Amino acid sequence: MAFVPRYHQLKEIIREGIQSGDLKPGDVIPSERELSERYNVSRMTARQSIVELTNEGLLYRRQGKGTFVAWPKIAQQLTALTGFTGDIRARGQRPGTKLLEMGMVQVDGHAALRLQVPTGQRVARLYRARLADDEPLALEQSLISFFGCEQLLEVDLVATSLYGLLETRFGLPPIEAEQEIEAGLATEAEAELLEIAVGSPVLLLRRTTYTERHQPIEYAESVYRGDKYAFHTRLLRPPTQ
Ligand code: GLP
Image 1 (cartoon, helix red, strand yellow):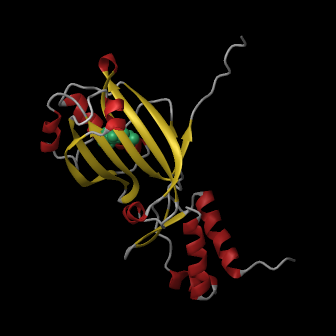
Image 2 (cartoon, rainbow, N blue to C red):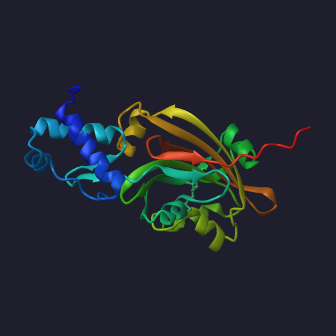
Image 3 (cartoon, rainbow, N blue to C red):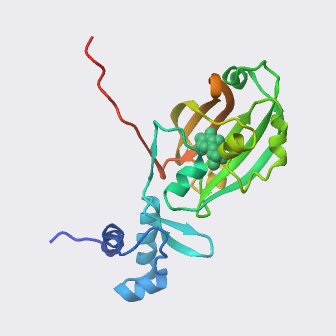
């Protein structure tokens, strides 16, 4: 029989626990000490199993709290215009926002083009970390442009959804959007905020959101954790010409 290292055996035991549903997303994993006692392996072996499963995205660690079973990748639909808060709630998780920066800024050429405003126009800028059950999943910079957009900065943006606010408070429902997705690597600053290693794969999203009459209201640039998202879309074969 081929030699299978102990850490690998322990990894497979935990993996099976997750696949069978005995260990559910959000469940805490026994500590290294408990694992080493239960499976009669060294603590180093237990640690290596946990590190590898964490790198594979099956587990995640929270400083001072322990190691938990991760949620499966978020299958983000590419056909429906949804916001972060709604997406996370739909998965049965608790959405969270850390407001990193906010203020009025002058838009540069690229964003001005997207928002269909003159270069230098003042728009509201939000830079938010987006979390699910306290775990950071994405960083989003939103430039928001509408008459009176400075009022947005007076609202509690930690507790509320931007899309919800635009619709209910400002009468500007997000109706449609254009989005591009590109591969990238986390910079040092992004890695720190997303609690991942520098250079980890990330997805870069650029979205222009429109309200009624194709009026742009938001241009957002987001950095999503590559280990957390899978994008899903349905393709129909075009009629033959
Ligand atoms: C997504 C989009 C962002 C948008 C956000 C709104 O994450 N990528 O461009 O700002 O949804 O989410 P919420 O309504 O939770 O603020």
